[in-house]
Image (cartoon, rainbow, N blue to C red; front, side):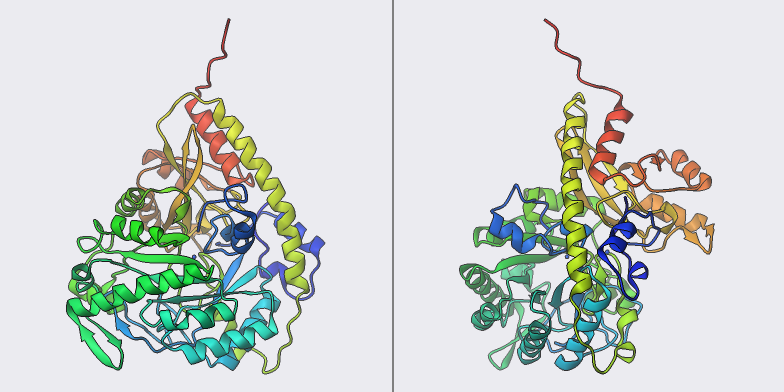
Length: 493
């Protein structure tokens, strides 16, 4: 069995049996904001709230899709890492959109996507400005969508400045997932990130601006937690600015009841036109990002699978199908049909039972391995928690840490451009892929050609398609045990 159900396989009328066949068919398409906790790690009521949310549950992101609608363009702060762009289809980062929508247009678009993408479980508003500052449009959109699709989860992202006064309305609308971007708790550090904020009808700058922002963010977080709303904190890791400070941020937000902390790398390409990009501020390396995450305690309270989505993203994490659902392609009148989404959830429920069994089998394999140093393994996957993507089609690799105590999801390495282009491999792309996988010992994929396999071997990397279509945890655990070739010796009398 293989990947998540693709859009191609679900064009037109479909059935649960057709979905099961699609899940059982190997594929080559690329896959795409969570806690690694599963149902045994959380209270049942909490697990029920996150189990289908691809940003709040690492497990869920293998199965479910998100959608952002760009209805909130106004913003009340300026960040040195942000440059919002409109009518832009070639940049994949927060704050970028191809179309700004009215609430009515957003409703039409969400219903259309829900009918055609049964994996859809979450609607988010992440700007491209601030959802709480541009509140009238945010609230109107949520009201319209909730009336059309009562079971969809509603999310919003905010910088927190205008959040405290919106908490009661957020709770009243049953928005039970909110993300706050918090990059500092020290205003002196904040002054190096935020040149200004707009609050109480005036512009504030410098340390005073950051002090106000910090106080408002903490107040908003506390009020959300008091109302039982799950809060994810996003923090942008900026080397030399807040990298050493983020463990203190982590401690502060967790002490106030945040559910999840997502530490993201700064995106600072000069072509994006941000202050940091134009002044040469670099982003962190994967090793630097992992070191800060580990310094924050690691574990299930850190999100490691974020893709820093556009404000109009559509689809699974790691993919963006937004260009397929522009307003010129959406009918003027559209009615919601829940049948495909209902059938898909039935399929996922059955697959989850199998996946749980595979995790237990992986744990049993590792119990038989002698103590070893943990290693990193890269997996090419298009969803469903399986090794089910051709190496040449991968634009990102899921990274897992294998050790005698388990198989742990450790993050995602993007490679941006896949190796196979028109049926042929490109050596330049292959070199960049190998560089992106620095520190990885093995690559597991559904298929790989002889030439890239030889190049990987020459670079000291193991690459294999021997575990194609296996669940990731089973594949990684089995490779780890077999590669080490060292089993625990049986006890003798």
